[in-house]
Amino acid sequence: MLNYYIYAKFIYMEILTCPKCQGNQIVKSGVINNKQRYLCKKCKYYFTVNKIGKKIDDYYVTKALQLYLEGLSYREIERIIGVSHVTISNWVKAFHIKKPSHANYHPTYKIFNHLELVEYIKNKDLLSGAGMIITELGDKFMLIKWERFKD
Image (cartoon, rainbow, N blue to C red; front, side, top):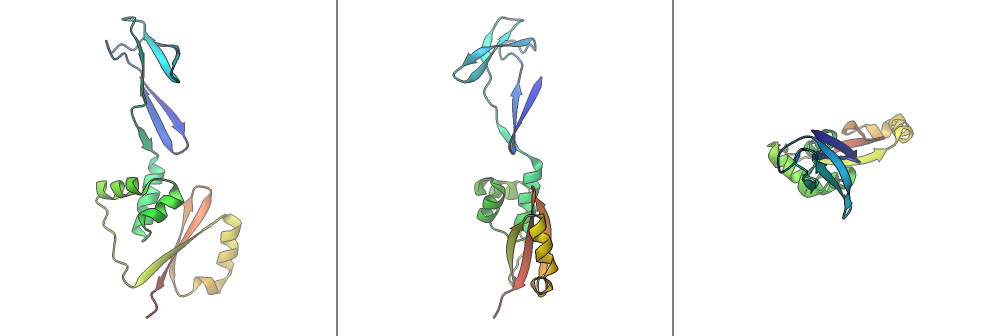
């Protein structure tokens, strides 16, 4: 039996089978050192289950890879999404993502709430002369612009 616990961006899993007999007749039996203790009714074995790992929600993985492809650095993505730059680097390697060269363009980004984004888009002077994309980022929006390097 698998139980899933969602906390912030992480999904925690606990496998609730007896490590001794692999039985699934498990009941809670107190807490020791802030860890839940279990009793297997089949073989009468007491055990605790440690967190076997954490998996970051696929939404954040996809968003991090999109931002990487848009030209943001690992550290910039770390600051925006709140996931370690090393983890982001590992995702890029795991999914074999190749960043296209942006030799002539420089991406910049701004994060807005809905009303700020509407006001920004109303100003046509800010929109001309650069390519841009707007992406959702939780309850906010990120506007990424590519401007040519000035020679």
